[in-house]
Image (cartoon, rainbow, N blue to C red; front, side, top):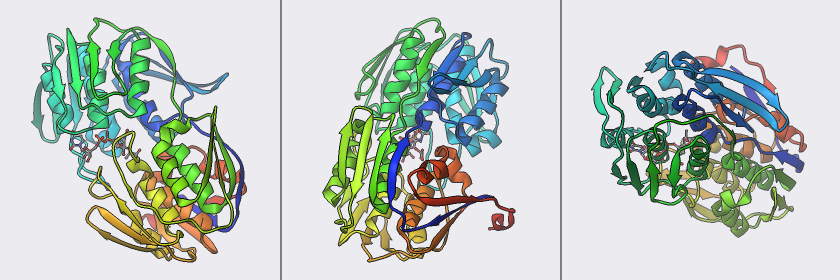
Length: 430
Ligand code: EPZ
């Protein structure tokens, strides 16, 4: 297994172009199941997760062709017919978002057998809201031996779905099914994340009739068929926020391009409060930090437009060196502080109780061997390593590869001392 070694202390100076959003790309790819015509996705990130979903889609009947277009990486997805409605456990377990093929399979071919995803390191992550929404659309759902057997032989029907709490996945999954349902679907208390708007925009280009995406109430007028389309994946706001925090941690001046600062306004507000200089511009933002110490700030994660849970670990890394005590509350996932003990290995002073972490800033961190536990936790360790004395080695880098494209290259271009160590597998033993 590969590892990442970071030698701390280098200031970052330069420019980092942001890639297309992983969490949008994988839902957009699933939308290709809804039509026999080609869906061309541009600004595609090349990540372990997109490759992985591509392989699952191929088993279901999607032809997947990757190429380099005028504006960067593209993926062309064409599904002449659904050849299988079966998504096995091994595939869904490895990437939960694979579960989202259920809705489109059901909408296009009237049946599907998809494994339940199970929990993961950040929480139990049930899919009850997804299943309830599909039932409201008329699907017959049975659960046997860890699988969802779903049927809608006469097609899905529009319905009224009131989500009891905000779920990004359930909102997207319902959208992916309701676009081909007969009649109108209204979803209330929907998630408002930019990735939802991106999915709705793409579906509308394919001929769907979706209004209200980006607000809590989304209306979908079902259509009988969808066509192909070309759609550019929106910029990755979590990658944007991560590099903004990396620049703040290491010091220096970094310009993040091909992105949008408004997607991370809640983060920018907290960075400014902590003493980081952030300037927005037309194609992104510039993050600047001089030599002074940052101030500790409090934050609570929330659904968009609140502070993103996917940036909580990275912000905690920044707070390890801030002056004072920072209180960080995680409200989205029940077990999302797995990075805290690893940050402590670098010398951070963090205590966790339930959904609240207290970070008392220390004067310096010291490099050490640390273990990545999930995607965003791993990158928080890289950020900490940028400012730690000596060398930090992050093990289990496959987590990082799921969601950060060419991380060493992007940070390295700004002067960071980050290199990949090719593993011999020895450290895979737990
Ligand atoms: C998406 O997960 C993202 N993943 C996550 O990013 C992100 O952290 C999360 O949204 C919140 O922003 C993808 O887009 C692939 P939710 P999702 O449904 O859709 C509970 C990353 O690192 N819930 O909004 O799974 C759930 O357990 C990942 O890129 C139910 O109880 O998140 C959680 O506590 C990690 N029942 C809360 O709702 C359900 O049926 C919010 O989850 C669905 C969710």
